[in-house]
Length: 296
Image 1 (cartoon, rainbow, N blue to C red):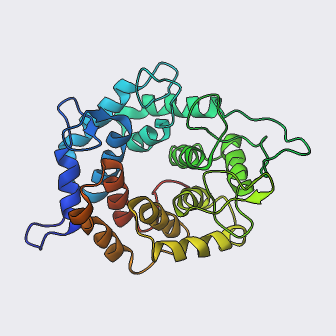
Image 2 (image 1 turned 30 degrees about the horizontal axis):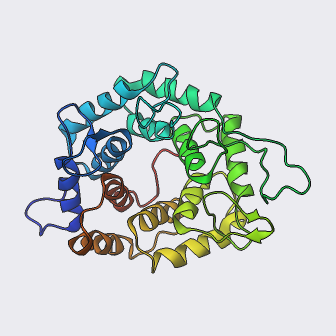
Image 3 (image 1 turned 45 degrees about the horizontal axis):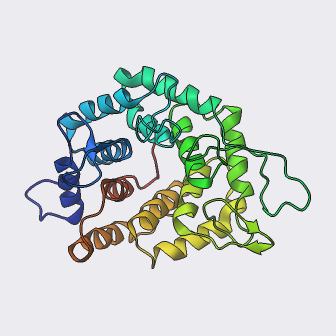
């Protein structure tokens, strides 16, 4: 948090808002007055640690995440829905660098390396344009792999020191295979029934954040150009947050980044408070000019 002697910024207020959503059991709610959620807790930990705020809350929050982990290492969105294991990489990112949480981090990493999405060999005449055999990670168990959960898996495994595993290299190939011909990504399709789908800035941010250090600039330059143009004018929390993390990871963070974050956070006065994931993402983007630290 910034010193109190300075005028308060929207980032300062956002950290205070995230802290206020901390709950006695150690988790964080997605919104004020809500119940603890795994994804909100992981984003709160990442944001507050990056901002140097909320110190006493971080240990209990990590403990809450560990309490939600199942025996095989997955961290589902809710115990009643173990198939929805997509928050596992977020929990890993929240545990990284903390000796007390090395064991749950290791189990989560082994789970990710062992599980995959549903994949099949692409046959002639397939209505999908991408290679359906290249493995990544899905949102939900036993479904096809998509860009965002695959990108999170790569970021978590690389940050945990597992970036040399063949699954990470294959997942990077999957993301590159889903890149649109003119640059950018959407949720994970390229052509469907012969029609090219348009790119989406948020998904493009996820993809580029994960590929930094795993692909050449030549391979993704069109996507970097697309994303830079989008964040300069489309400033939703998810587009701006992931866009800045991705551009920062490629050494292309705009000079106006922090001002844009302040502007986006200021829009809450008109539209209402953002959820904890959005607040956490914007705080993390503000405090991480080179992208997600440790993903190397």
